[in-house]
Structure formats: C-alpha cells, structure tokens
Amino acid sequence: MQGNNIFYSGVNGFKNRFETIRRNAYYTQRIRPNVSWLSRFSLWQNTSRNNINFHETQEQKQNTGFASSGRRNASRSRNTNGMPVRKARSRNDIERPKFDIEVKPNGYAWWYVDGISNDGNKAISIIGFIGSVFSPWYYWSGRKNPSNHVCINVAMYGKGWRWTMTERGEKQLQRDKDTLKVGPSFFHWEKDHLVINFKEYSIPHFDCVKGTVKIFPEFISDIECNLLNSNNHIWRPFAPLSKIQVDINKSGWQWEGHGYFDANFGSSALEQDFSYWTWGRFPTKEGSYTFYDATPRREKNVNIALLFKNNGKVEKVLNPPKVTKLSRSLWLVKRETRSDEDFKPKQIKHMLDTPFYTRSGVETSIFGEKSIGVHEALDLNRFSNPILKPMLAVKVPRFNR
Image 1: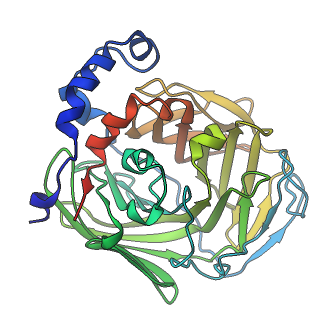
Image 2 (image 1 turned 90 degrees about the vertical axis):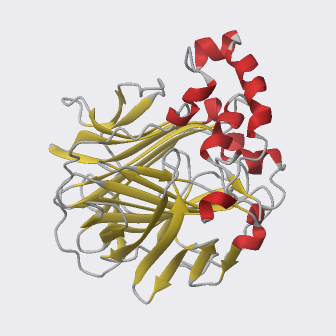
C-alpha cells in the first residue's frame, strides 16, 4: 500500500522544537494563539461543506487575440509596474502546455487547475509542482535541485473533502513535452485537452484518493504576464475558460462543471521577491475577469487585470474596479480583491485556510455585474517565518524512495 511508504521524515524531532517555539511571543501575537502540536492537522481547513454557487459561462469560440475597447485596452502598453502583457514565449507553449521545460536551481514550475461543479456543491484544485514552492523540504535543501522536490497536490472542497500533497524525489519524476508524472500520478496533454490521473493518500484521513480529472479548454490563450522586470516570475494563463470532468473514488465525486488552467514559472523563491499577492478569477456574461495584484519587495506594485472573452479574445482592463478589503481569513491572513465602489465584496465559502495562504469563493461586482469566483491571498512575510516550516512538513510529507 502506498500509505505504508509515506513517512514523515524528522516529524518526531520537530515536536519538542515546535512546542518550544509555539510559546514564543512572536508566534503568539503574530500567527495564532493556543495551537497545540496535535492541532497541526487542522492547519489546512477545508470548510467548504455547503454550496458554492458560481456563474456559468456561455459557449466560447476557439479564437485567440489581444484586443482593446472602451474601458479595456489590450495594446502593448505596460501595466502600472511597467511590465507588458505579452505573447507567450521561451517555453514553446503558445499553443499548448509543455512539461519538459528547464527548471533551474532555486526555480520552480507549477501547473494549476481548478473547477466548480455545475450544481455549485463541490470544487477541486490540482497543482503539479517541480521545485515545490511551499515545500519545507525544498527550502531546507537550499533549493539546489528542483527536480528532487516534486508533487501533485489534490484538494477537494465540499462534502467528502480530501487533501493530498506528498512530495517525492527525482527518481519519482518522469516527464516529456506531453506528460508530467510524479510517482503514481500524472498530468498529460492529449491533443486538445488535459488529463490528470492521480492516486494519492489524504491527510488527515489517511485513505487513498484515486481518480481522473479532465480539462477541456474553450480556447488556449497566447499570452503571458511578466510579474517582475527581472523576468524571474511568469504567469501563463493557458485556459481561463474551460469545462471540467471529475471522476474520483469517493461518493458524490463524479461531476462536471466549469474549470480553469494556468501555470507559473520562476527562477527564484517567491518569498525572496514578493511580500504579498492576491489573485482571483470571476466569470461574467462576457467571459471571465482575472485580477493579479502583487507587492514585490524591490519594485512597484504589480496590477494585472484581464478579460478573457467568450470569443477567445483577451482584453486588458485599463481602469479595473479598485482594490477593496475583504474580511481576514480564519488565520487572519489579509485579503483584498477588485470590486465596484458601491459594492462590498464578501467571502461566500471557505476552501483552503492556512497561516499564510487562503483560497475561497468570493462574491464581488465588476462594472455593475455581480460575480462569484475563486480567490486566493498569499502572505509571503508569514511564509518566510521559520516557525511554519515544521508545521508544513506534516501537511507536505516526503516520500523518500
């Protein structure tokens, strides 16, 4: 059984260290009070037990382009940080994802998928990592070999939720342009759609999660966004408008819905270059808006706002709704999103809640139209705190064979 092979390297050694650190005043004041060693299993709280009602999108035509109109402008002009939204390049992935790209020491690559069921009751996110950016093991290794720190993370939200994120070593990694295989799980690009097949063990349930998820893009966008002038961090939105099919070996986890597929690539640690960011995708009648607002440590703020239209064109939003505060998460992570001035955005459902990261269903208003979408907030100052690394090791066990 796979579960017999999963072991928590050094976890017992962390217990006394963690209990001592926990009583430190900084931790008590800045992170969360009264956290015992046994409560570590609730650090990732999947609390989305009820409905998540997301808007459906219309049929999209397979067409790509970068256009401009009215309040939106997709010209080659730069965003507020002086960085262009540009044609995808360097990785030869303008028409489809490629999994055989080079990932240098200290770097990373991840491919991200999410989806919401048509009835709004369930959601899922899956991420394939090379150089797992949130792995304590990659951090402790000195980030010398990204290929030795790989995983496929599956997070299921709603009734019957599960969480899996087992890190594996280089011997468990196989890849070519079409396939990213990590242990028993893989991403595979098949002609015009993405197939994800996985067999992982859930924490804290300690049971096998096995299934297949397919993403059918309405179109593949041909753009990428350079998050820093140094070109150290690239966001590549492959298929912001997609259909998703989910078939997992749990009751009620066979469903269809609307999905999303993107990727991020980088040559340095996130916490080295950013202190905070938020990201959100919000479907509307026109298509889907995506907002990416980040705070670099040494450059001006990043503010990216795009509309992926139903006809396959991409428009840059020159005057997006303002950044508006959301209520803090259960772990008191600061959250913000874009919203019209006369509307107060709000969280509809929890999905994932950690001391430094939160993902949730959020309702906002964009140019007078209400939308419920997927939102994330990432506090990299908190993530940089060494106190969190032993805690992360429990939720990200390492398989050493």
